[in-house]
Image (spheres, rainbow, N blue to C red):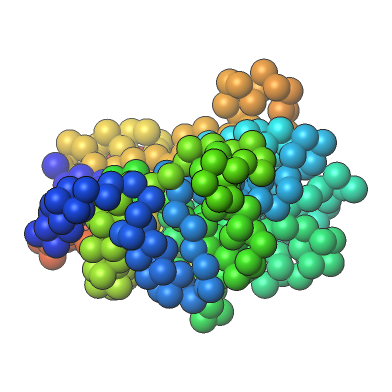
Length: 360
Ligand SMILES: *Cc1c(COP(=O)(O)O)cnc(C)c1O
């Protein structure tokens, strides 16, 4: 079976972890500082603050912008649940805008219609590694004084109009094993704002600004040096891996029917965290038929967040037709850097066969 994701751990990662173990400095130490410095440099921001996961990066980024009870935060329902849950963690209310069906990212016109006096922030998600439409979104945010927290958990290194994602607002990244680079678990917030950085550093460590002096209620959302050492080694390889993802994605797009292939805006660089097809037939059957042909396909995501049981319990009864339709039609195929040329053509053959069988 060609797996949908395959974390790549080499000798560099192993040696880096051993060096940390031998150093005796295991958490929030010099490797974490190095990872932050290197990650900020890679994104082109002044600062980066490491956290324990992408989820805690989002949570702290919102808190650092003063988001809390009584506030509304507009985001997409077609994402991993952590995006909206991070808003709930602060006591604020997630408000869902629909998506642009071509890119699966926030429909900025719908965002504009949802703004109220309570709206304090917006969270665009660069879903599958394709940047959200940051130009009009930043304009809207500036006009209404909204904080922008980018969920870039799937989009390490992706570019919108030549600019790396995570540099428009506060950028939140994940290093979970299936992401474009990993540290096991881990997260990062990128920003150019010194005041936000100060708050992030306090919030991740019990609100502490100097030894045992606590300015605010904080958390333990620290990263370990073991994880940071892996992260630094992975960062060295990220550009090569991204190039391989883009090459694999390009290969699929030339060998699959245009109407099922993902769209890439001409002003964007897609980093193909996922290569996502839209199936014009029985999508779930397509997943099963691909598995029979040795290709692991996965659905990200089969249910939009507002349809999840506990969001329904909270009273979310939005109608978001594009998000809902996408959740029934999308399917992602393996695009990660470790698939071989042979596997790539096997995937293409399997998908073309399956499309014949399920198309209506
Ligand atoms: C993975 C992911 C997260 C959460 O990251 P974790 O490191 O798993 O906490 C948030 N948003 C999106 C879009 C993701 O893909």
